Length: 277
Image 1 (cartoon, rainbow, N blue to C red):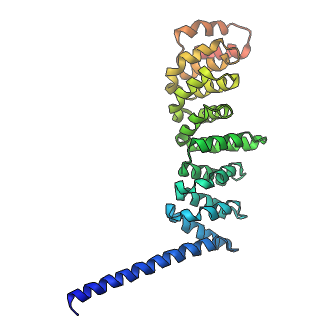
Image 2 (cartoon, helix red, strand yellow; image 1 turned 180 degrees about the horizontal axis):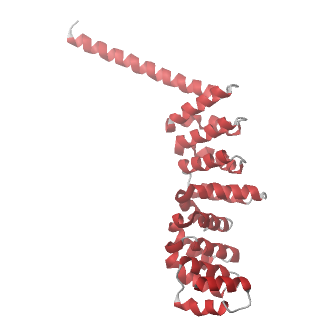
């Protein structure tokens, strides 16, 4: 056989191999999707893991994997959450279901759920309303679990929390989570200052001050707006604490804090003395 015929044969074999591989890949995805419905937990689990390993290529599995978030097996639920996170942006339709898992009593499920949502990156326009809805839950235990799950994400959650500060119902909770994250959330300092200046809810303003206090040195640019809150009866104790925590009392606030240290409000007296020392 001459070299030309050998070359043509090689091309033909390569083409057949490629076609066979394509068919196999199609069959493999179909099989995996079918295995997600298996009554055998180990079969479902293996299928979920294989789909997760394919990442964005497993986009067509988002629907079935979302259904598995209600699976009776804790392992299957946890791995389905992981797989959706691995798929990434294509798994955006699963975000509402994943966010609901922040209510789950199992800390593994909650942690995986928030991590998956961050990997999918649905954007604040999706996350803020969902978190507001969850944080309005009448069960304080649910609210606490949601807050803990978001704060555990750390700096990656900050952009969404900054956006949350602009929303009436989300601002209070965003301040609390930013306070919990602490100095790692320093990028939120300007937004917290704006919240302190413009929000009409005294509780939100107080929480914004406490969140700034948690930023330590990163909140130095905020000391003047915080000092201005010393004239607010509902925020003055928080403002005094914040200035002491940040470690800088501006000259404009010194006299007021010294006066408060000799006043009748015991909590404010103790906080003022602590801040001055």
